[in-house]
Image 1 (cartoon, rainbow, N blue to C red):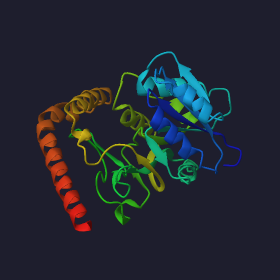
Image 2 (image 1 turned 90 degrees about the horizontal axis):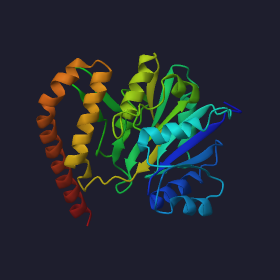
Image 3 (image 1 turned 90 degrees about the vertical axis):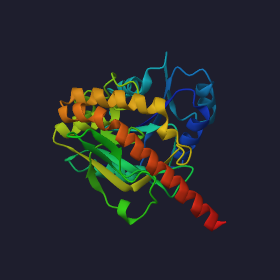
Amino acid sequence: MSGEKTAVIVLNWNGAADTLACLASLAKVRQPEFTAILADNGSTDASVGLVRRAFPEVEILELPRNLGFAGGNNAAFRSLRGRGFNNVVFLNNDTVVDPGFLQPLLDELQKPWVGIAAPKILYMDDPGRIWYAGGVVRPATGLIGHTGIRQPDGPPFDTPKPVGYATGCCLVMRCRDFEAVGGFDERFRMYGEDVDLSMKVRERGLVVMYQPASRLWHRVSASSGGEMNLGKQLRKSGAAMTLFAKHGMFGGLLLYPLLLPFRALLGLLRFQLFRRVASQDQEDFS
């Protein structure tokens, strides 16, 4: 791996505070060397100027307008062409990384059968609780979901393993593989593009590898119920149907709409149970 060049792309849209915190955590990653690139999706909150002053070593790509997750990351990747980069990391700006997060992911890419490497991701407001420890895709029923979400971190989530998909919150690929599968599909404006990318990689005979030795924390509240937001669920459902149609997942196309009310109810019940247990734990602690 000596001599390989890695780019870490952080996409920003009017998220100055989160982006500055993310870049500050990246600045603590001493090994291996990498190039940090901020791809700004036409922000109007002075993000670019703040980053330029705080982190002059970070490359900045100013996009003329908000191209969305897929479009912004694809544009940033195109800026790498012809510059000798071997690996690319796509990293959400609302994350904080462990100083040792990068090497285990790059080590996975030394295995020729691995197409994507993904870290363990924990809640920033509850740092001992899992947000992502792998992803499951079941074409027959249309089930797509994170493994371990809201569960306490522990030994069950400490084993590297192939998984169904990597989350776009953080994933690492060889540049040649990302190019070969056509990058992120920009028809997915929000949600689904990471699952689609993972499926395209798996269709090429490569695996998506979950590597828990790499850790980061994601700013999404475990207790606020934001993941149960109706608008968010509708956007996710639309993306799921696009995904099923694209990949010929006819079982998912048929059963996903039928099972959606039951899954939504089950998700709500699990969330309410989680809140009750978390509240009891807090009372016991106090």
